[in-house]
Image 1 (tube, helix red, strand yellow):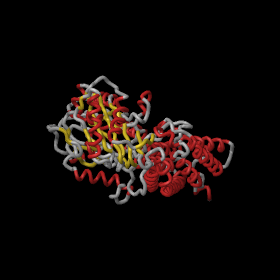
Image 2 (cartoon, one colour):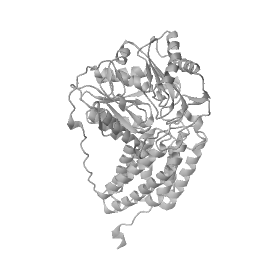
Image 3 (tube, one colour):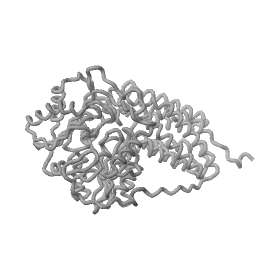
Image 4 (spheres, rainbow, N blue to C red):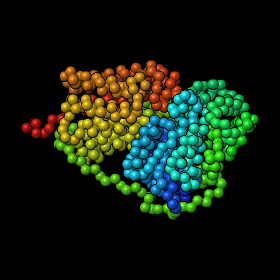
Length: 579
């Protein structure tokens, strides 16, 4: 259990601040994460890792010469926002391009992808390298769907060393992808982790059982099995990873990783079985690592990672590194003194809004809708988190609370500055995506921006325009998330809502009743997702466990759309019309 915290909602931010202070000789905090304290003396590729908090020393703990140039730090087990990724990249860039590298999770892919597009438009060449090492999360035939877990460390290390050696962006990216293709990991959990402030772990196991095939976001294993002896566990881990041998190389980088509360002594006992088995299979173990490198808060568990090395990969796996959490060899890299001008990003100029009085009046209704949303999600946080923990990482409720609160605050500021309804919702969407993190955060943020763009700032919306705005919300989310009806996602509630509202508005039903009926359809559709197997998102690897439980994303969306109806459908009458 996580026992040292103040406000649980501030845990990740406070941990990052404390880390940066404790290691101020090597790192400095910037908006969205941390970067190296000292800039390179000459331009080099900036290797930027990232993901949610809760995995220390991944990701900020490996910033330094020979490793990462920066880390983007999201909330606990939650993807950082595209704005965070963009900000860290701007701070770390030294003129030779940027590469984001991270585990293959939908929220990370979306947010780092959007940040990359923005950086490329600005002339900062940016690429992405995804890690897909978890053999338990998808079959070999669908290797591109696999999660990134402790294999992250090897891929990051190779890329960091290659960049430090002066290789160009294309070469660093090529090496990272090669390392990923030759890396395999299997993990097992003995008990779940507990969020700060939570009374119970995200999952529990029966006495004498372990969960094989765990994730690093608090997910349980893909199936439970009897807890074996250390010898039997070592044999099982080695057997499963070697069954996927991807290359003829007889030299291996090996990581026996602890997940958070498995003691080093336990890992050494396990290593006593793992190492001889690998050597007996004909492998030479190259600078193996036994310890905590990619964790999951206080989860009890372990994972085994193997990377099949060629001469090129071995050169960078064994290269020196100097970071807060990981040091290897003697580092002699030249660096320039810290540039204090880089210690803060330029403040974003306040927006100027041009809107009609009618649209500003409707903007006040939109703000009430966001206030209602934030209150509803605060009250529902535990329920949504418990629902998500069945087959996911349990953070859906917390992410929705953070996103909706940020959206409300940004909307209130926009209203004070004279925003119309469209600009207010666009500002709310940007804030939601920035603060919520994760897949649902970026989708809700993008959807709200699309809603606002269609609504505009020129007039009070007609029923047709409001229905079209909802459709824009749905279309934007569909284009980003690539989910369809039946995939067990928020789309299973959103698409029925949008279609129902359009049909009823077209049939002449008054707006209030049309919205209420559409919300009822969405609520029923969300409930029916209990019988579906998830085909997208983090719940997909644990599909069977989710059967019988409605999708949390569909559930929260239906709840929100039902609650905000009275505000969106109460179209104010312009002052001139009352005279």
